[in-house]
Image 1 (cartoon, one colour):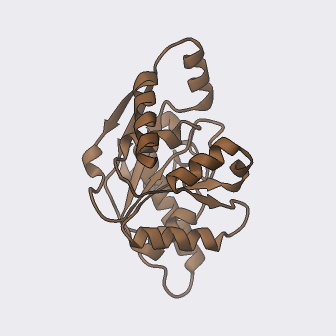
Image 2: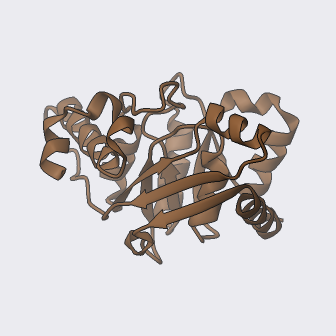
Amino acid sequence: MKKIIRSFVKLLLRLLARIEVINYENLPRTGGFIVAANHLGRMDIPLVFYFLDRDDIILLVAEKYRKSAIVRWLVEQMDVLWLDRFSTDFHALRRTLDRLQAGGALVIAPEGTRSTTGALIEGKPGASYLAAKSGMPVVPVGATGTEDELVKSRLKQFRRLHITVRVGEPFYIPPLKGKNREAALQQATDEIMCRIAAQLPESYRGVYADHPRLQELL
């Protein structure tokens, strides 16, 4: 069933959008890794199954979507993990780490929710914690053209979407050791978010537009 759904999603996206993936070669072909991406709209999730050709994708979906029978069914079929965004969900974190260590590919939006402005909002520490704990490489990804309002507007006018996905080079977050773990986690989160920002046009960089680390990367 998983392969059938993936094939349907790819076909649908090809019909609805022209998708350009830049620097696709930066994605590891095997082994565990973490894709850290910005989050603009609901289109981002099916987009994952378009550009990431893996059978062991790890996704985390907010618990609130359990109320939808269709979403609940899709989550079960695609082996997605439920996440409580309003507390430290240790169960979801443990399962995610286990699947990463087994060679899975985690796709996560460090912002934790869709940006209502279309630009980056402040990142949360979940992605940096998982990267530091697992030791897996992080691949920063910036996507444009998936904003909810833009998608609705273009589809109403029967116009194809133009989605761009830019893939950055993999990097590592060092293990969290000793004191000042909170400060180290914040620094790691800023590193991830600035590397995502570096893959985006200037107008999408949001709260990280003037960050010193982003200026270094650029």
